[in-house]
Length: 393
Image (cartoon, rainbow, N blue to C red; front, side, top):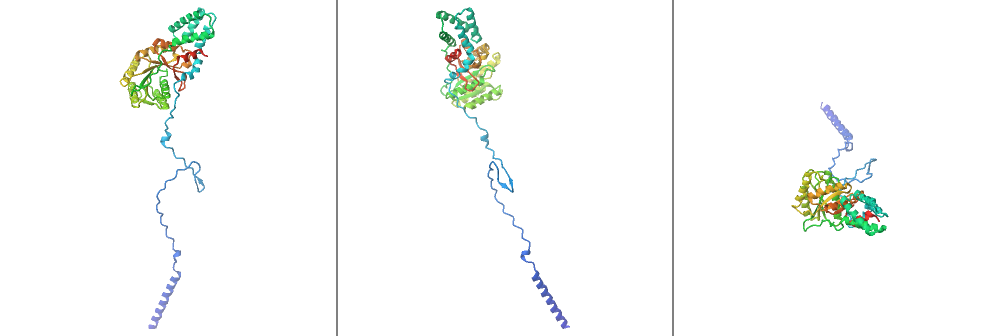
């Protein structure tokens, strides 16, 4: 019995040793274990991307990516208009003389041809008178000219072309009154700027004349403020703003339909604050037959005078309107004491005689003339240049 137990114990030990040996022989090795999962990468701080260049970008996996250029700054998109430097006023009318000569030769050359005839009978003098009236010289000035010419021709007797031209030149100059003071009063008074009030009916070119006058004064070295007192027409305010921006002149404007007198007052106040030389007030176009509108124009002038004196009241007339322009001038002169005439579109009409008639009727000199559509085609009126242009070379 004891022998069996010993054998069983021995067999059991052998079995245990055999199983242990097999386990050691066939246990799994480290390289057969599955790999540990990789640790998550540490988050990196974001890096600002460089702005892409125009053209082709870098190639990634065979695909080309093109990035748009960066948008320019807002201040570069909204650029102030380039300020222009206008030419000075001196010699402007001489430079523009050719335009005047082309349009006015009907008056000057027509008179020269008639006065050069061998025999000046009543019929010829009637033609001379008709030529003058057609050119809007006016009935009274025409009769005065014809009488004076007839007297001089009788005294002169035989007439050469040179003598006829000299005779006619002297008479035209006398009628245009070269001795009238045509000074444009635009210089400041101490700390107060000169104030120019621009008036006239619709369509004569007041806003354009105001803008061109600003160019004339800036070209002469002055500092200008523009007042957009035509508050009833938004286009006029925008147009004046454009004129001011081009030459660096300040522009005072008000709400559409606002009080024109208030805008005019504010413009003068800005002129004083900015130490400007001249303030130009562009008023609304008024029909001379509308009493209420004319009264309002008088109010604008009175309100301005609470701040500064009005040095010039320029009445803008369209030379092509002829004698109708004369009636306009008379009514405006009664309301605001016109000190000078700005005659526009003088290059586009054969009726330059209105220069004579408007001065004779009002006793007010023509101070400025418009001789084209360009920005620098407004010129101080020069009687000698005007008459020479009428008569040609």
